[in-house]
Length: 117
Length: 112
Image (cartoon, rainbow over all chains, first blue to last red; front, top):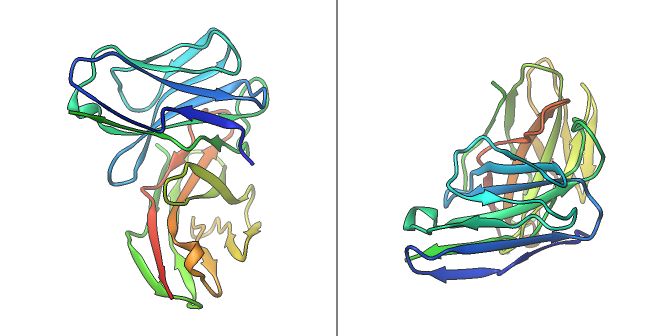
């Protein structure tokens, strides 16, 4: 059902490398989100966007950065990856404009499993 | 702040057993409540939701009732299948806030 895509699906890299995790959605959603999922499965919101040129930090402090130049694209970048960044990263989007409605549904991508050696 | 507490897993059941996964919440406003499911190797997908007290959300044989008096939204299914093995997340959102507050997730393992 979900038309939200994340690449790569798996990524293993060395410490110090710069990486970009891609997220694209074809549903025309204004709102997009990045969640970090730890090995214990808990989800932490690290970034979100309400639309083009809008980005905000989430509940969990993260060394990553995001950009929103196009509605459909919300990439996440780590300038210098470290082993502590090893995690599952989930991208999501939701429809509607303006403030978030309480009953809005999130659509998730399949995630990127990042391992930093 | 807002929070969601779920029972810890894993929950291990045999096929056709009855399932309950407990979820309680605290919220400063009047939240909508959700259950999301994450199958192995996939992202999360919405399973069901309820937007006001006494509402019952249902989907794929799963049900949960919004209980304001006990601040609970327990997930139930009368007869689980092996294909229900997944991680289940309870979540809430109060209108006007961007953050969907998730519980820590409960892993369900169903054996034949």
